[in-house]
Every structure is written in C-alpha cells, then in structure tokens.
Length: 109
Image (tube, rainbow, N blue to C red):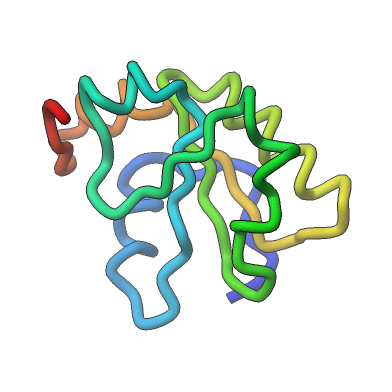
C-alpha cells in the first residue's frame, strides 16, 4: 500500500486496518494519555521522542499517525512525508473522533 491521502476519517482508517496489508497505527501522544485510552494495535511513539525513535518505524509499511485531535499526529505525518515517505496519513480528529464514531478503544493501562 502506498500513496495514502494526507488525512483519513476514522471510518476510512478503520477499514484500512482490517485489510491484508494493514497500515501500522502510530500514536504520538504522551504515555500518560496512552494509559487512559488507546486504539488497539497502535504503537506508542510520543511526539516528544519521535525523532530519536524513528528507527522503530518499519520502512516499507503504510502508516496512520494518531493523537488526541489530529494536531500532533499531523505534524508527525508531515515530517515523515517531508522525509520521503508517501504512505503516511493522519487520522483526522484523532482518537477523539475515532471514539466518537464508535470504533474500538482500550481503556486503562
């Protein structure tokens, strides 16, 4: 999968996550936010650690970046696109819109 749009609505992202070449969801919120609520299967790489931990992001896999409302993840997605990754999208509205759409979340640590 390549050439994801810059942003994906929650329902669009959820549909892609069900596919055979599912993208990796990366949560760029801080650990305290992650411990409250998270999208199942997401990988936590806080924006504050993003540059130092970019080697943890699989090179050939499509990515959906996610935060609380879409701002921080938008920054991360843009940084990856600027670095040459075309298969990166931002989750529009973040986990707030994801949860409001009735999509699955996990609560607590």
